[in-house]
Length: 538
Image (cartoon, rainbow, N blue to C red):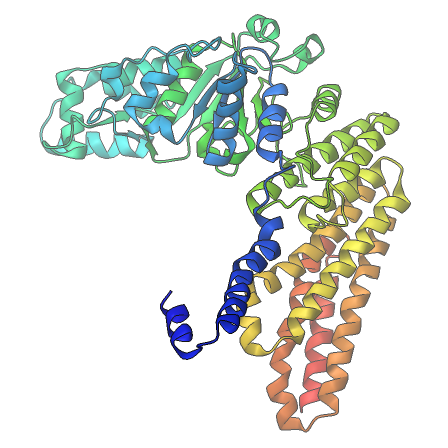
């Protein structure tokens, strides 16, 4: 307004003032037109479709643990507004550290029963069991050694001396120990936490816990099916690797101690990155798309880093029932939060496809990969981290040419983007360091996708040949760099030689991929690089 008044005081012509007003009014209109697409929320269904896909994939009467805003509020919203899958009890693990929320998750909501629990509000109110220290054998040895030095007879603290040799409890026994109160236990707590804090804290006498498996209940609840029974264990031994148990894991322990396999339990993919979030049950999971189901079947993490077993036909149906968020609309704009779901969509389709193909169901595998490619077009969403899994899936499913073509498109895109960053002035490159550092890793990810596929098919020679071929473009860049150094004066060449670090990360990531095929390759290549640099600079 001040600028307009100033201009009007200098310009006396009414015509000029009108023209000026039109020009200034055009500024916000131009801003609106230029930025409309970014702020236009029409045709953006990612939050709704994500929530639908998550809930649709869960067994009846499931308990779903979620971990952040993005995997919580869309699910709550569709349950609240449409009562869709309101038989599922959704528990936010972060909020479960607060007493008021613990009260809520133990209550029924709509058609979802509260979580099984024997703890009362008095067991987790503020100032009670705020932290629970996990004792180990050496802790008990230290305690009783100190008591002996103080002249305390061996007959005292008898209820606790057994933990010098006993290293595990059932989860039921662990919850009973937390609730157990006695003068001797108070004395131990005072020793550890002091007179002022001992009532706020607690201990568990071991860090290993036994979860018995009720196979009949697990079958009735739909956690497993009849064909799984030969692989079902009688009990799960859990080693809690953290030093301290907080209230959210206390309620998870309480639920595990009391659910008796009568209800399925799933953990959202958003919390799997930290084993403590899932009570160190990493090796007893089944991949269900957007979540992982607790199953009484032992599955070690495979060499690819994939966690959990795959029920091939179940996951096929899960992916077929996905709603995809309308990513296929190339005119719709999706922000970073929305596009973060793409990784889960593609990973689900790829893992299902690989499992189907390896079980001989290649037609179904290709069906899922083509579905994911149609719903999330690679021409717009070309992130190598998610598309590399699609590369693996296509090759294993028998579409080798399609998989290799996608891999080459991704590799070319990575180099094009990296070369663009290198073309920037040093000051501008400093703002793109994170993106630049990610490119060598992404390149190795795509190469690994191909070699892993060949390896699964028992074609190790093809895997090695592809790996060697994928190093050739890096050799070409390195040789061009050396040639440039050779044309410089020695002093300038020595100064410029440090820029080889813009190329060597590509080698270093691929050395890890090469190791299983040729353990001497990395050493030989490093020697070649060093020799070439020395010759060019000395």
